[in-house]
Amino acid sequence: QIILPAKHLPGKEHDIYISEISSSHSVSAKGTYIAIVSTTVETADPVSELNVATSLLGEIHARFDTVTDTYGPASDGKTDKCFVTKSLDATSHFESAAQDIMHIYHQIFDHDLNLDRKIVEES
Image 1 (cartoon, rainbow, N blue to C red):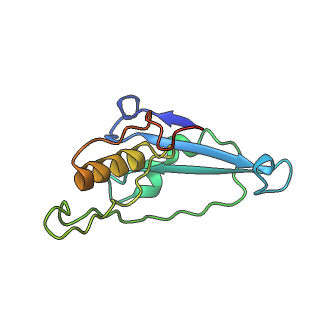
Image 2: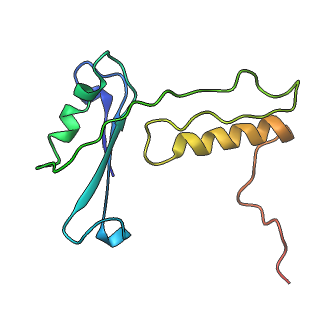
């Protein structure tokens, strides 16, 4: 994974993420690589926003561009007990998704999730 920080990208407010997968992941023929480039759209021309990243990839045999809307919950779930996650964002490392789950856990149980605590004691 490569992260191009927005502070180093003229005119960008959001980072650009590049992930690469290949035959070692059993998703392509040997010698063929699949790159996923993502960011948060900031202009009316989202494809051009990725040019700085795609220029690092070398020869591109096929390219598929998709823009996906993202959504968030209408409420915090406290009143109706309906807890909804946000849409996945442009990040390729799922940090924001994990933070969203931790936030929802706190909303439901009114305390933070402790991942260091053993749930089942060893016998």
